[in-house]
Length: 176
Ligand code: GNR
Ligand code: NI
Image 1 (tube, rainbow, N blue to C red):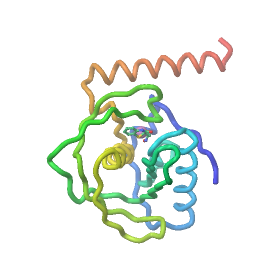
Image 2 (image 1 turned 45 degrees about the vertical axis):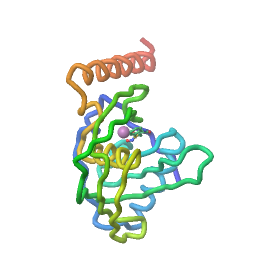
Image 3 (image 1 turned 180 degrees about the vertical axis):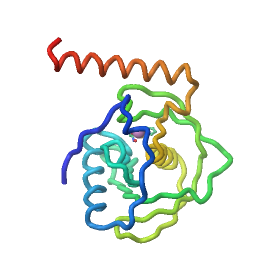
Image 4 (image 1 turned 120 degrees about the vertical axis):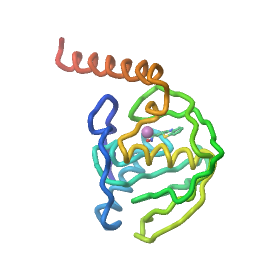
């Protein structure tokens, strides 16, 4: 297992669409394990492969709270088979947009088909924070960030702050 560096915005790699995996083989299982370790370390409740620079349709989630029994889900090639008309709103954060949060509304329930860690096809219904988190991670697979669901004004405030922060960090390491 390994901790992987998490890419933060602005970065063109966060805007790419990821490719499906052919199968969940040893390489993809390793990726799932590394994503989960990196997510727990961050800490976060979800992480998608493009956030660590891997353009594959792979993600992990675990919404169990500290002290609760872990409930890791390792997901490849997810497809939403059904989404509720009813929406749910959560204050979302993203490890690629550190320290920024905003309310996002998404379908409250989804039916998901995916390949699991054993390369078996699974279909499950999800609701609540889990449904929101999986949709947030699936957005990453299509190069979409939660700020893309906000008004351009709110989105640009957050993205400009992150760009400025990155410029300052680069200047520091260059010794300017
Ligand atoms: O850690 C995370 N918390 C979170 C909170 C509400 C909705 C979505 C998320 S996902 C986020 C981790 C992350 O950036 N995943 O891509
Ligand atoms: Ni995210």
